Amino acid sequence: MRKIVSKTLKNTLTASLVIFLISCGGGGNDSPPVSVAPTPIPPTPPVSSVLKLNSDQEVVSFLSKMTFGASRGDIEGAINRDASELLSEEFSKPPSYILPFVIDYTDDNVGVQHRSYSAAFWNAMVDGDDQLRQRMVFALSQITVISDLNMGDRPRMNAHYVDALYKHAFGNYKELLKEITYTPAMANFLTYYRNTDNSDQNPLQTPDENYAREFLQLFTVGVTELNMDGTQKLINGSPVETYSNEDIVGLARVFTGLSCGGIDFWNCEDYDEIAPLVMYQNYHSKNEKKFLGKTIGAYVDGDTAIDQAIDHIFEHPNLAPFIATRLIQRFTASSPTPEYTERVATAFETGSYTSADNVQFGEGVRGDLKATLAAILLDEKFFNGEEKLNTDGKIREPVLKFINWARAFDVGNVFAENEWALLFHARSDEGLGQQPFQASSVFNFYRPGFIAPQTYSGNEGLTAPELQTTHEGSVMGYNDWMLEYVFNSSPARDEAIDSFAPDYSYEVTLAETPDQLSEHLDTLLLAGLMKNTTKERIVTILNEMPIRSDSEENTTKDRWNRVAVAVYVAVTSTEFSLVL
Image 1 (cartoon, one colour):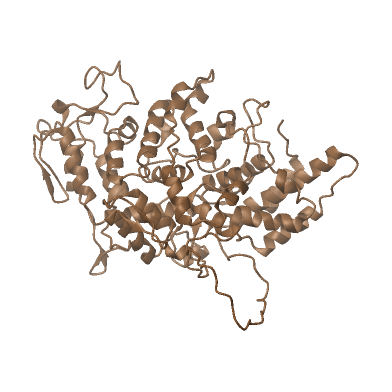
Image 2 (cartoon, helix red, strand yellow):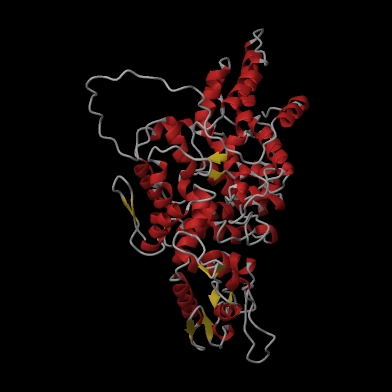
């Protein structure tokens, strides 16, 4: 049975725990260094891999980058192991496809039925064993964007697209681009479904240019030429445009002639929206296609034209730094340094990466996503022992923060179909503030180059995409959202099903020692980044919460409430928004 949060407690906590825009100050170790007397003959230290995770905090830090978050069991399974070994294990795990769930799903509530693919994705992100693949799909969904805001009544079609991302998450980016081009979801979202070219008869009837433009601008090369380290190339102090409008016109002709596999181009009575689109040659542009220095002949068949176009764009020198930057921002660094970007871009370019402990990743083919991910996650900057700077790290967006909490406390009954909030209110600023596959446009939830004005990060010129959607209303919405879930009081379709219920059983054993509980939460949730002021706040609040001894039931309840309050303070703290 779900617990109900009292209005007094809710108002008190919400009013006192508003998150301010990121101002990271590192961990809370304010203790002076301890002097140690030197030993005459130091023992020879054991040989240790530079990628070995030697402490719980190191494990949590790494898993916070590679997965949606660590549970106590995950920490125990990873301690004293090499990060490269854990990464290799993730690459070997089979994908948790969601389309089978959606096909089999039935519900009397039509609205819930339409959200079945979203429920399946929430379940997979929280509970899927293939955690790195889940993170990669979430990352790719913010690069090759579709949004179901106008396609929410087609869950099978949307799930089919998500599964294409699952399929290619560890494959080659070129093959991913080719497959999503033929997905009904992308064709409907970017309006090249049944795209035709009648400009030879009527100059005003030109092909829809939407997909061609976004394919270049957002999926592959970007709008300005880049150096390998992601910085802009400049001529006479000005950036150089990557493509022109003529390039868009020429490329748009390539993406014509695609329709459903029904009776014919215009009739789809027997159309299966989970099948790839079919090329109808009679409706493919008969005009020559010129773009980015490439010419495809007028009468080259449509499928071949698409293959040639993607092959050509894929060789553009911008591709590696462009995609490297986007993926880094989704995993490890909101404002990656040029040096880090170049190392990752090189792995994408060469299709190969060798870790510091000499483990090789990738097939040696340009666009290899395993090599790229390995370069992102195993980079030397995370394992060289150097102190992290305030300019390092990634800002956690709302989805990452929520799922991190859910995984940390092994929420039971991962059954998103029962959660009204997850199904219908996550996107709202009054809710979580973010819903996967519900960006307001193809430009995603936020711009990759966003610099937040009047903030510490903005004053340093750091990009912080996630802060574009952060404001007072969204902060209060997130706080209220987490209050309901942390206290196991989120609105459910069936109150008899205790879905997304946190397991605080271990934490309850620490309820009467607030200092130990705060240290535990610091490690489990923040990898040691919790400030001393936050720890002191937890201790102060909990010490003011009496634990009754008149009955076992009341004692248990009071201990549980102490833990929930401590967890709530931790997950609404400023420092919880940062992964280093």
